[in-house]
Image 1 (tube, rainbow, N blue to C red):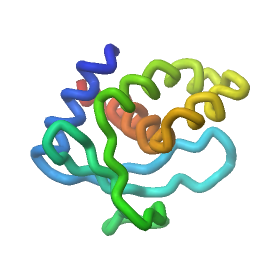
Image 2 (cartoon, one colour):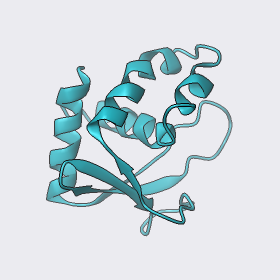
Image 3 (cartoon, rainbow, N blue to C red):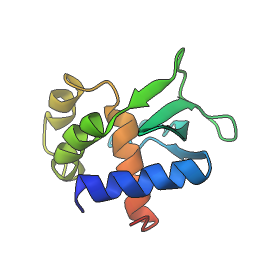
Image 4 (tube, rainbow, N blue to C red):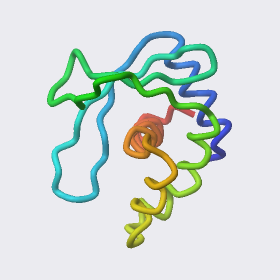
Length: 112
C-alpha cells in the first residue's frame, strides 16, 4: 500500500484515540511497546503506559510524513530479511523501529 494512504489511516486512527503497539524485531529481541498519538499532521511516539515492556524514551519522538514515507520505502526489503537494510535506513531516521511497528500493526489489522 502507498505510504500516503497508510499514513492518513494511521493519523486518523491516532486522532480518534491514542493507542499502543510494539516494535517488530527480526532477531530474538523482545518486542517493546510504545504509545502513539496524533499532534497536528504528525504522529507522536512515547513510552507505553498500558503494556510492558515499554520503550524507554527520555523525550517524545515526532514522526512526520516525510520520515514515514522514507522508512516505508524500505519496509518490504526489511521484511524479506535483506542484509544491512535496517542499518542503512537507521542512518537517516531515528524512528525506524517505530515506523516499522506502525506499518506492521496496520497491515496486521487491515487498518487500510
